[in-house]
Image 1 (tube, one colour):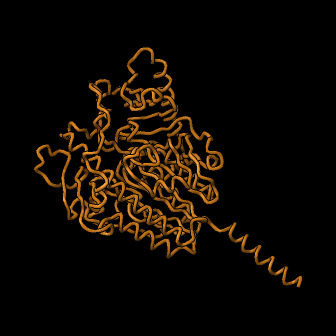
Image 2 (tube, rainbow, N blue to C red):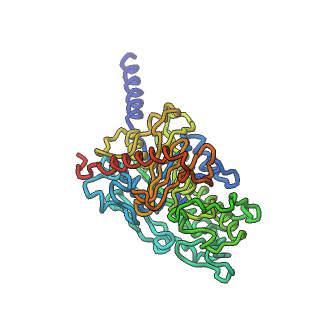
Length: 478
């Protein structure tokens, strides 16, 4: 009897030991051009994102997460490498591998080199949307980062359905147009006709196939990036007549430097108020379609019994203007363009809201630490693991973002948003009191009473750039 009891004890102990030492999976989900202001678990109640909201209620929701560059390519190269764009001089539509070299491990490559199956489904590094999605191309992907790669071809702006171009089309003569423009298509057919539906389907297939081995699965949805294409059913909850546009202030641009006026505006896009409302409604419909695909992937994880052994991350590569200051799309260093939703769900950690400033480059060291992996030397992100036990923990007191080829800079603190154009500030400065003026209507940089604040931020920026650029990228990981 004693021998039997001892054998049972050993059996149970071995099961517990195996469970405790089983590698955590990673499911990384990223949307394209999704601003935090369009997620209902953040502050937008007009746009409905029930699946993202459910994840937010189960994980840690970071309310002040910022991208490092508000354009797809350099943002993705930054968080996948773990370095600021100005450290690697990666400012274009590339993977960034050409600048970090062959010996530097990317985020997913670290997991691959430690025995994980790593797969990319659709856009993780840069892909041209809609062009690479139309052709099913790899885009500017980094092959060394993955065990396998899968693309999700879709019809994009050529999809069958009712279409309307709401940018650069004042007389409404053009029905649709390809490229990086706001073409709306209320598409015929179901989810699987389009890229994101195919991406969810492939992700589910891979979860089922690789559930018995440790995996790092990166799932890239391309909506709500333009063109605004989704099955027509997703447009029904968002009639454009119900859309309330952001406040318009007379002379809003008068105190903004020329470089601070975004590249797409209602003015140069010749957009009427009706077209503006249609653009926002179509963006919300695209978000709703993407959110539905997120839900499918998360449900598959649950159905396969992997929730208790998988870290789930959801975020976006940068934000998106939806008519604030009559700006549209990204590139701008204003709040709506640089702030992103970011949610991390870790097995065994309680749901919470963390209000500390965090950055997308913090994902690499955070998830590596959670998986007990040694990271390469000199990563510039900071681990967020302490916030998972104490959501009041302060990771950063400011965030740093750049744009326009790394020559425009944002320092964002609790009270201030400081934007400087060129290192010598030769093309202007913006300063906003974010406690009194969160919509950034009044640029205080030119007022004498704020000279000291501006001077302090100039020094902060100089020190930040020096610190970023002194990182030694030549030391290989070993």
